[in-house]
Image (spheres, each protein chain N blue to C red):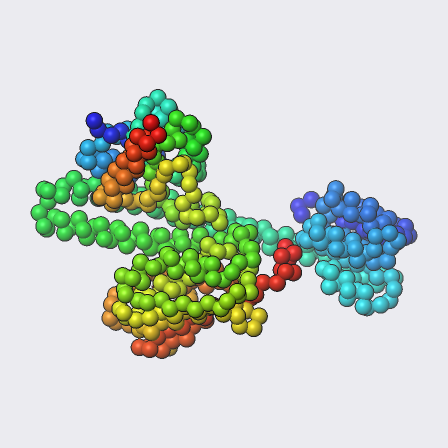
Length: 138
Length: 371
Ligand SMILES: Nc1ncnc2c1ncn2[C@@H]1O[C@H](COP(=O)(O)OP(=O)(O)OP(=O)(O)O)[C@@H](O)[C@H]1O
Ligand SMILES: [Mg+2]
């Protein structure tokens, strides 16, 4: 069965580029173009991985989603691949913290634009690690 | 100060207060008075005056103490002292404590008016400077936002779609078509890198940096940096020889930003070295400073270029290999080091090698109550 991925990103053109790579690689991909819709999708459906943009709307709204996930017992273990256009901005937003503050238990960060092979590698690795963890805890 | 300037006069002699009010009478000021230091300080909190006139000699809290407290409450308030005794020394002491001017008793109405006018002008300047600084800060942040969002986001979207095209068409395209895609990709990548470089420069927020300062060992950020560039060194087969003095005196700083500076400088030393050579990293005490030396035996920097390497977007134009960087590393490093009240200097000879010297003052306790 194909793995399911949700993308939350407010830039439709960027999403098109990411989605078609993932489609080609055989994933089943849903998209939410704003944080609110994203939240709804996360609650109503089951995904194997979330691809999350950080800077959306009027600021770092992606961070809000990530923080909510962290508190959600059901979604906390879902792997999150953070895609950001601004590594520098992250340092801005969290002065004094390492470039990549942990948002959820399991996450990783890549920079836009993402090379296809690297994207697929990361996505596969995160999903696999999550499955191993799940198998171990059951 | 769009509304009437607010003036507070603190003096234990009612006669003085009365005559001051009279001199300043009319519509142009909002004048308040207090007969002693503690009442005066209470009023300061309440009124937030532009200018405070303080008699140095009062029963209760002394004028000097009032000055100290005022400075704590709001350092932008302009303070003027009235000196009763005809001694210059107390006026000088008051100026040392931050008073802007002094008024020896007895004074004429004209003298009083002049000093008030000068004081208020000073206040206006202070407020304008603060506003300008604030505006500059906003502009910088705004600029960072524009650069990152309005410029970078569309480029990211374009590049991502090129990636997608290339990925999906990998079996279909002929060599010629592939080459065209590669050309587009490479130029896009260059553009994105330049924007990133700009972002790196404007993202160094010196004032934010200082909030994270604490006493640290200079070796901590160096170790962090070395960890970071180990792979580059291995790839270039460059050996890093480090020697650190035992138990160095601490410095006042921020580990993360300092390690970024060291990554840049040691990274350069490796990058501009020959394969198989050495880079020396040394940290030691040197008078009132901690001195870090980063020395390589690489290509060196021509004399005429030395003054420019810290200016930003500068790369030595010495034929050979095309430059790979953007001339950002050293500006960012210099900014970080200077934010630490330190300095960075360089000595170099073409063909022989380059040495960078980074000096940060040793940390002593009294620094901590600076702010
Ligand atoms: N150790 C060194 N040996 C020789 N040349 C150096 C050395 N360090 C710096 N330079 C010269 O100074 C220039 C500016 O250095 P800087 O680190 O600011 O930029 P860069 O290395 O070109 O790019 P980047 O922004 O990626 O670091 C370099 O391009 C190089 O010509
Ligand atoms: Mg460099």
